[in-house]
View 1: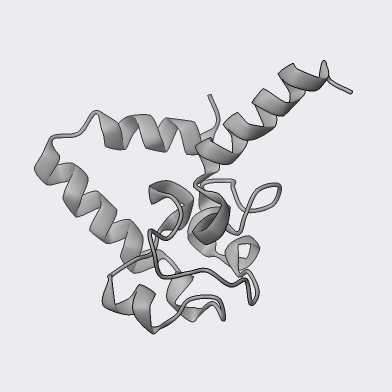
View 2: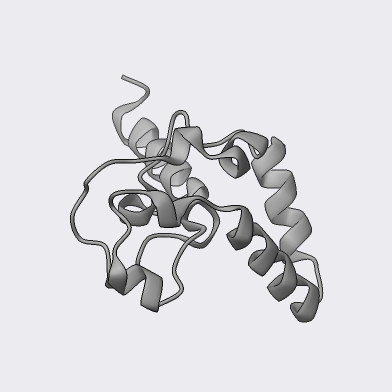
Length: 109
């Protein structure tokens, strides 16, 4: 289990109140709001922390750049280097699963 999986497991196992507070704290550390792809709709919808929570539900439809590799939170979770653009492609685990599915389908080729 890597850092990201361990943190995710820790958060999932928390009480709902603690989990909500932790997500708020992580969102406060998140730099999604400084990214050129982030927009007014995302801000108004209080979106962010895409690496954990998943892609934008309706707001982000156009890629304008990605700050994930530069995010201290992503770096502390050891994510954002291989997978990123979470706001459009889905969270870290979703992207890992897609890669795994592709590898299974292609037989590792």
